[in-house]
Length: 220
Image (cartoon, one colour):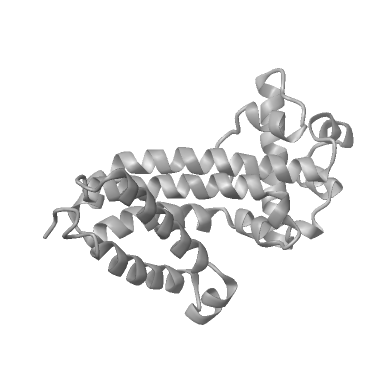
C-alpha cells in the first residue's frame, strides 16, 4: 500500500534533490512506492536503481535527478515511513480515546491496533530494518520510529490512567515499546505461526503489564 505523499524534508535529509514543483514530488513518491513494492517482493539487497526505475516508469535520468544512488532511495523511503507512521498514529488517537479509556483490553488494543495495522500494510519497512547491514545504517530512523511508538504508548497510558506521574508514564511507555519490539522477532513469529498469533501474544503480555497500573492509576 503506497504511503501518503512525503514532505520535501525527506530528500533534504537523504541527499536527494528537493522537488521544485508538485510534479517532481509525484515522481519521487512514484519512485519510493516502486522501491517499497520491490523490497516487499525481493528484499532490499536484491533491489537495484534500474529495477526501481523500471517499476516506477522513470528514466535513468529522472532517477538520478532525484536520487544519486540506491542508498539515497532506501533512506528516503525509511524517512517517509517515519513521517507517515507519526501522522497515522496521531490520526488514530483522535478516534481511539474512548477505547483507550474503557478497559485494560481497550487500552492495549488502542496501543497495538494502529501499530500492527501500519506494520502489516507496509511490510517493506520491516524487511529493510531487519537486514543486518541496515542496523547501523538506519539507526537514526529506527530510533525515531521507536520514539513515535513510545509516544503513542504514553498517550494510551495517560488516557487510561490520568493520575500517573510523568516519570511513571515515561518508564511504562518505554517498557511497552521494548515488549512489542522484542516480540516481533523472527523466532516469536515462527513459534506463533502468524502475525495474528504474535499480536495475540503481545495482547496477553501487555494486558498483564498494564493491569499492574490499575491501582496506581486510580482504577481500583
